Image (cartoon, rainbow over all chains, first blue to last red; front, side, top):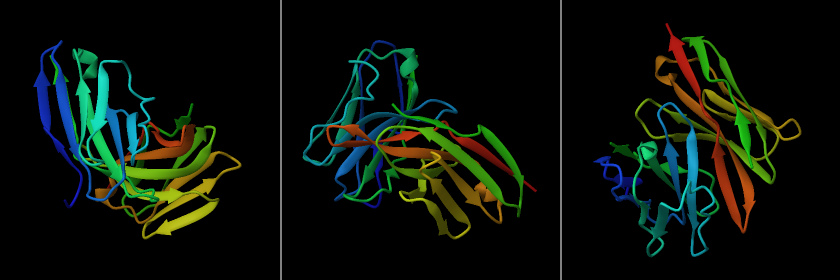
Length: 113
Length: 113
């Protein structure tokens, strides 16, 4: 596609429910990143996929968070048993191999009530 | 780990020049990037410095001094549309073949008439 897409654009859920956030990277981009941004804050690294290598999960805040990338393309970030502090904008970015520019999607705004 | 410091807010007059500084502490430093983010929008890539010196792209320039662990973004001929948050981000080797991108908390630039 023309750019990185994410769905849903907004998600409201109740505390304790599981949510799945989807990212469709730019076709041909080998690297995919997930970040979290709280209101007025910087971007917090969550997880990084590079080609067929094992993902770098060092940024995941707890074992309630997990992500997978199927077929080297679409990625899903799953948050289990959501908590109110999980409320944030979740951003996905993709990068072409050997390039520095990260192309960000529009984000998913998650609100946990 | 990595840490970055940048001013939280800067105000400048339309048509003027503004410099946004970024200092960092990291191991495995690879390069410094700058991203722009308008309110409610996704971050967009502005520049990347891997080597010391100044990189110029139109009205925007970015500088890096690896020995000083310091960089800055220079915006010339400021326009109202430049009002946004600007993030510096360090690319560093985090082990196991992973090069993470760690973002600063951002500098909110307000351009006034």
